[in-house]
Amino acid sequence: MTAVGTATLLGVAAEAALAVPGVAGLQPRLAHRLAAAAAPARTDATPHRAPPEAGIRADLAPDGSGWHVEVRCVLAEGRRAVDVARNVHDEVRAAVASQLAGHGVAIPVTVAVTVTGIATRHDEA
Image (cartoon, rainbow, N blue to C red; front, side, top):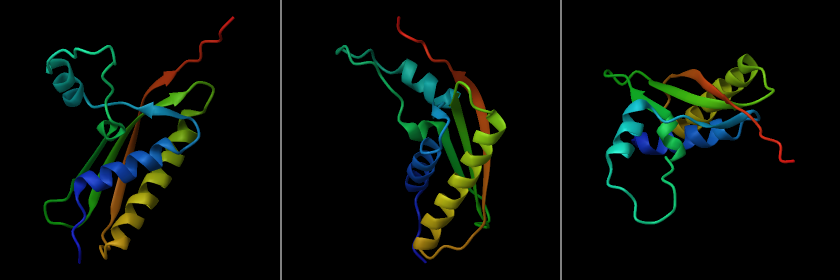
């Protein structure tokens, strides 16, 4: 059995969540936002953007019995939150389980989805 790293699962989960129609982006957790704010000021004009993985948390149970993945997402305006959250749950679970299976790991994956906001569209006149 080949070990699968947390960083790999974060990337797989982020990619799956962002591919779901109605997901505008992933919301970084507070700890990541605080760390970014405490970092030295950037000298260039490029704004600092958190990587998509910052909106995902993946933990392996202490006894190795399964992975728990948390997804924090911002939805596009005009979408039903329950429908998009359900789709994110299903897609992330399938993607992470597939990644694990590809490495010979057959353990349960649980996914929790939190909708942190709705991104509004601003029409240009």
